Amino acid sequence: MTERFDVVVVGGGAAGLAGALTLVRARRSVLVIDSGSPRNAPAAHLHGYLGHDGQSPAALLARGREEVAGYGGRIRTGTVVAADRLPDGGFLVRCGDGSTVRAGRLLVATGLVDELPAVPGLRERWGRDVLHCPYCHGWEVRDEAVAVLADGPLAVFQAGLWRQWTARTTLLAHTWRLTAEDRELLAARGVEVVEGEVTGLLVEEDRLTGVTLAGAGEARCSALVVAPRFTARSGILTGLGLPTTALERDGHVVGTCVEADPLTGATAHPGVWAAGNVASPMEQVAGAAAQGVRAAAAINSDLVEAETRRAVAAHRAATGTR
Image 1 (cartoon, rainbow, N blue to C red):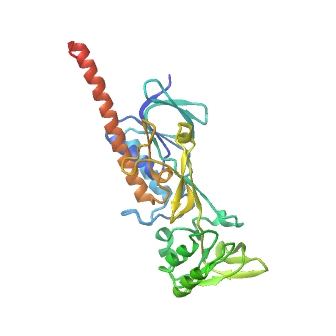
Image 2 (image 1 turned 90 degrees about the vertical axis):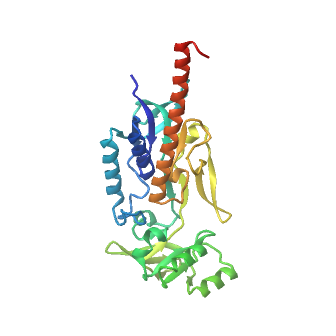
Image 3 (image 1 turned 120 degrees about the vertical axis):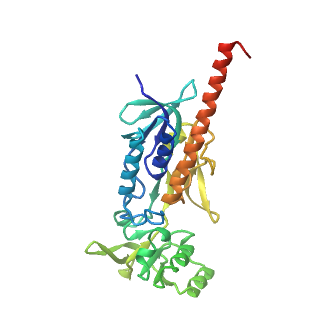
């Protein structure tokens, strides 16, 4: 027989595990299905999470899995490929290995994929010395030579932001055409502009030392800032009829996400909640975990309401009242 759980959590990152922990402490039967590929896996440490600053992402998730399991939650390594709505309002969750489980409710916390600019070598150093978030990594490269790759409309903003952490900030013009206003702003902030398309990275003893430019030029830096495109891992949600929507920042599309209530995580599909980067790509670990907790509380309330309706119906049937 197919196992049944009150809630199946798809994704075991900070949002999914925080939601699962809240639900198992509410005495719900919970299964977390996780592919084991968190977005922040390349990073050695996480920052800005009170009480956990400097901890490795892997250690945080390992501790979270232990806590969920300690309250009776189940965790399974695997992928969810689809979820089918059942007549009773629940879901049949289909996994990549062909197995299925039944769920009364779904919490989707599958996160996102960072799509990087098309420069050779970026992916291999992503999260180490190829960066995007100064709040995550700025302190670690303070006062160092930081170069910002201009391949989109937010590059000038990024350069001005990173200037807060280091006066040695450079904007690599790359393929982006800077306006006179852009150049004035950068000059006012003391940000140097280096012309020329970036063609690759310079690495010595497994450390970034700079970039190569078209025409055999070079620009030295110890950290390279890029602006990835945030693409939601939304396969299970689109399969349920919840399409992704464009994520905009300052009027520019920077990725995709799934629409969910910002407070509860409820989606437009009854019985399905979303938390973390799949719905809020800009959230850091602490914010994603908080979203998981709020979504879990909303899910438990929804289950309580459903159970109360059934109890009232059963009571009326037993007593002959209407």
